[in-house]
Length: 118
Image 1 (tube, rainbow, N blue to C red):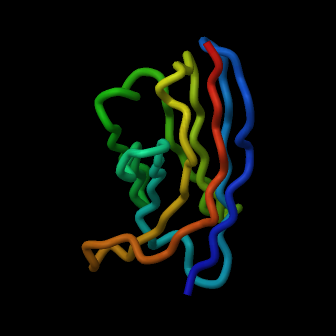
Image 2 (cartoon, rainbow, N blue to C red):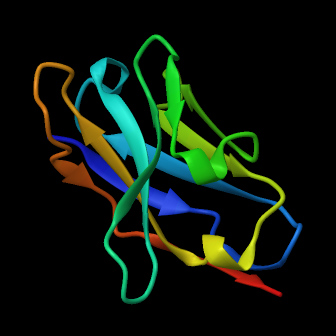
């Protein structure tokens, strides 16, 4: 069992930056693949970035070069550094975890709102 709690969302002007954090507890955090998803109003939830236990990362095309996902296994925390934010980045951002031997993300945080004003 893994519990996830996000923080760091808020209101920022276009071009600004935010850093999201996701604190994990309850299991062996370091073995899990971690992901950040987002869901904008009226749109499907989309996978933004992932990081494996060894630190390998992947990004959705629209955030490449602007967002950076990282993890600190000693602190059981995963981060999403978001720079050059655009109004279209406005969404609820969710942290998620999956075991490397499974295909789906089964543990989710409650979400944190990110609003980018133009």
